[in-house]
Image (tube, rainbow, N blue to C red; front, top):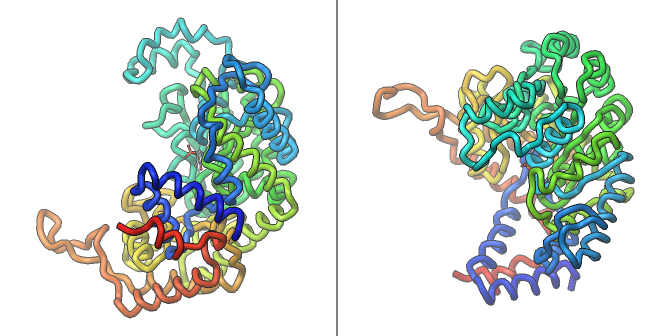
Amino acid sequence: MNPGFIGYLANLCQVAEVAPGVAKSIVQELADQRQNLKLIASENYCSLATQLAMGNLLTDKYAEGIPLHRFYAGCDNVDAIEAYACEQVKTLFGCEHAYVQPHSGADANLIAYWAILQTRVEMPALRELDVKDPSKLSQDDWNAIRSKLGNQRLLGMDYYSGGHLTHGYRHNVSAMMFDAYTYGVDKASGLLDYDALEQQAKEVKPLILLAGYSAYPRAIDFRRLRAIADAVDAVLMVDMAHFAGLVAGGVFEGDYNPMLHAHVVTSTTHKTLRGPRGGLVMCASEFAEAVDKGCPLVIGGPLPHVIAAKAVAFTEANSPEFKTYAQAVQRNAGVLAQACVDEGLDVATGGTDNHLMLINVTGFGITGRQAESALRECGITLNRNSLPYDPNGPWYTSGLRIGTPGVTTLGMGESEMREIAAVLKLVLSNMTPNTIESGPNAGKLSKAKYSIDPHAHDEARARVTALLDRFPVYPELDLPFLLEHFGAS
Ligand SMILES: *Cc1c(COP(=O)(O)O)cnc(C)c1O
């Protein structure tokens, strides 16, 4: 029996003894993932070694502080694990300093923001900010805090151009801490306009020039961004949450490798990097001391079991196999984008340089939301995404975001990418929006409801199933056995 499967089995037996419903849902999740093709650009399948490293007594430990400098006794083994994880990150990315405690990408960004503020700005002591109950801060409170911090400016990529909520989106705390400005992509090309950005940076004079994205399909010239940041004395921060795996795997080199150009780099560990759900901050030594105070500044106790899983995943990412994987992710994305173009789909910017692409579906008379739902019905899981300057807004959207990290982990290659493009076309070209029946909009086309031709639906579903049968999710796990023992209702 495969050791990963033995580990799973032991784990589920133990869980089922206490909470059988939880064990059942875990097994059902495996069953669902076996039946649906994952094209979500921000998701992946981490190794069983990574998963199993999280399921143990390390979760019992408090380990506030950093290795060899803790506020709790008895942290020797957590010290060894965390120090090892940091060394693996330094080898992987070639950075001066690594901090592996953030629970998520959003935490990593908050830690980086405050570390930059504390390092570069004459800060009032935090206790002077009069924050009595941080969970009840009003907009006025935030304005007062921001003004005490000197109304520092953040210039990040606009959410609607592919930036992330934590990059200054108005409902995120980043837009309340900073006087937040955003840059977008060029309306005609969909690409970053570096000259326009340089102009804007000179006008805004931000403390932080922030790059990185969740939905931009092209490589970014970080050398150019560093020159822009230097010209206005800004800190260049790069959030590589989405493409860290491509950096680790050597796909983005030279001008396109943020590690060579940014002062501070943040990431998630669970997207292309293929580790457990979590965050990561890397920085030049100037910011190291402040970054290491992420706890207690932003986070409470670190999660030693997740840090152990990060250590496993970073070790995997340092292997030659991971380089091959990262290159295959990018190659598959390029082949899939070209196949979509060949099928007549409208691929934003005409293609991709990374692991993701955006498809405009409005040519089929439908919204992103309708396309997302119909594809899920046919066994394809992906997410709708607004396109730059999207007339359908962030809820209905005009686009789909498609990524290849997951299907590449399953072992799929170029011919499978062409098959996926054909199935996407089959579904999208056989959909019609429904007409709204009653209410003030009666007679108009719905942006949510749709019909799909039943023959197209069945054919798509069968083709997806055929693909997944050849490339099963977690093949080490004996699903029929697990369903028989834990899945019965
Ligand atoms: C996913 C993502 C994050 C947030 O990561 P979480 O772990 O979900 O908090 C931050 N920045 C970017 C660019 C992302 O794509």
